[in-house]
Length: 88
Image (cartoon, rainbow, N blue to C red):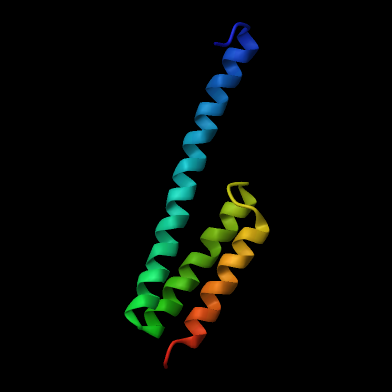
């Protein structure tokens, strides 16, 4: 348990930041799930539009420090190639 006042303040700050990051991560996962569902349904147009919506959200998560930049680049690359492979 935190003893000093500064340690207590850090506990509060960390709790706030954790809640914010958790909500951001959840939001990103929702966008990724929408892309995955569109890909699995085979609807290329829906997959492309969902992918377009997910891209800025993923990049925002990188800027906020929730995900590493290379993780997001890898996810976007893999999703993009899966969308391209769908029958038109």
